[in-house]
Image 1 (cartoon, rainbow, N blue to C red):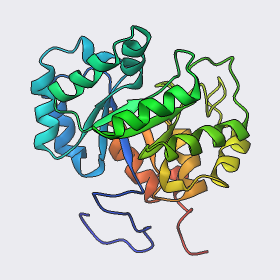
Image 2: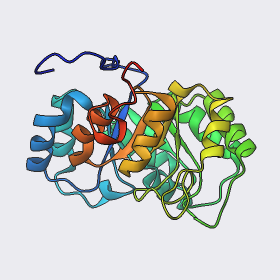
Image 3: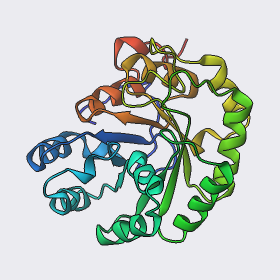
Image 4: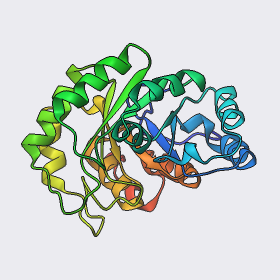
Length: 253
């Protein structure tokens, strides 16, 4: 930090298991990535190339190389995985991961119907090749999954070998963990945390109010995802109690 302040919560350091910030890249150019990394690399743990943007991104290998040079891993969004699965191209998906030197992959079923046993088998298979993040929750705002089922799905996917599970919210933060208004389904989150260790969950929380809510509930070292590149510094100040929303949260009472 640039100068001393007391009563700042202790942040974990990279490489970390808690306090993870997952950033969503929805189509940044190489120049934009370089600018983003200049200010935010220290606070970014992993980058997701949103949904299937990697399919149409120009200079994909060069783009991945810029992230790699900064020591930041990248993975393709879960929708791309689903696009391969629905076309019966799982083996080709695995070859693509190797071709592009991917060390992480996301397994999800937010856009298609998939049996849980099949999803867990995909996780088990991919775990032999890469580190797997598994997303739980539907992208369909009309599909409400009860808390007990979220817990059951998360447990099964962690047991199948997922490194962390991701709570679905989409890039807008208006499905899954959240109501259409963006309001957190508080009872759902609190119930999940009674059964699943906090360090094993990345909560998609693209909106500032959602990030504030999770920091207040879990603490400065909550894992959050789908953060916009230009919001990473802002999120870090929220984590440290240096923005109005959490200004007094970490102060001695």
